[in-house]
Length: 385
Image 1 (spheres, rainbow, N blue to C red):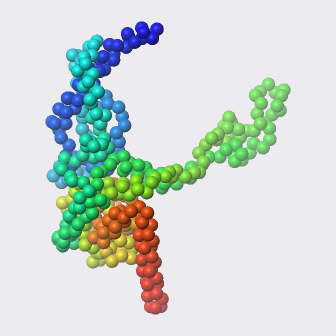
Image 2 (image 1 turned 90 degrees about the vertical axis):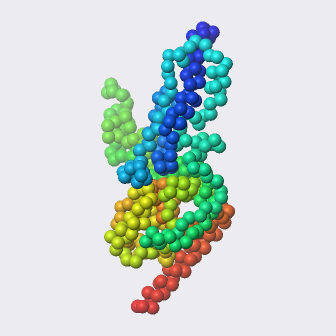
Image 3 (image 1 turned 60 degrees about the vertical axis):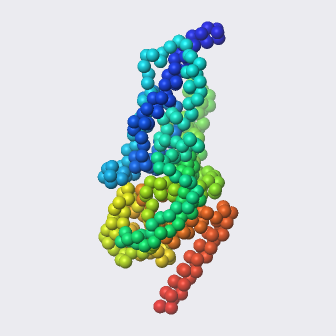
């Protein structure tokens, strides 16, 4: 029986091998005719099309995220990622025998050649490959602007923090970890003991001719308790600290590679008026691709933003202010443009460049600084009274 089945499957297997042999040249011709540029996708958009599906003929990968394209391509604030890899299925591929050349061609096809968006680098199927040449782990230089978009100076950014290979799997794991930890987990249902009523037996055990029942709140009854229903619980799971730190480095590197990072000397506005701050931000980010912005300073009591900045930006739906200690990978990928104050950039660099075991010391030093600032403010208020 097994030998008969094998003879029946031989033509089908040979046809599949011939089809797979045509995948590589067809995909190569498609990529050469429509190359992907950095302005046609972003790392945030690629997370929605996480690779994992097996290749099929005429595979089309489409992603739509609220990420805006550069002004040279489109003024829309929605990024549509569409890239097709068409596989030839001509009748010449249908054959009953497979040649050794076809078999060797199939075996030489890398796994990451099958329909992955964005394109992958030769070093890993989940590492983003940019068209421009990037020398990783080398220091970068960036302009420092003021709020009037005038260049002030040039700063050096640590390559171990702002210039690392962008790993999609690390970003996906970090975002999933954060969203699971933030989930409330308050879902609940009542079981048989928690539903009111049903204290007495509906009818006698024997003699009625009906099925035996012990309570009208059994899960078999309408209005009864739920069997194995949801209970309040925590959805958080563990993710190592070095993986979380690597995810932040990948997100920062992606922002620089896509031209979505702006560094200013200070985010302290001249006024707490929202209209004035909105006009300032639009002028500051006029040439940067994106429609939403994340402003990062050193904290509420810092001199590079502080409370005045939070009052000015609080009612803007497309902007958010966040301290360095509250910065997460989720927020880095959620907003199109990242604006860092120079002190905040140096603080991020110091926290991520230090060894993992020393990060707690930096965090405690930051908390001590914040407590000292609050103490000074409280003493000033007490003196005024």
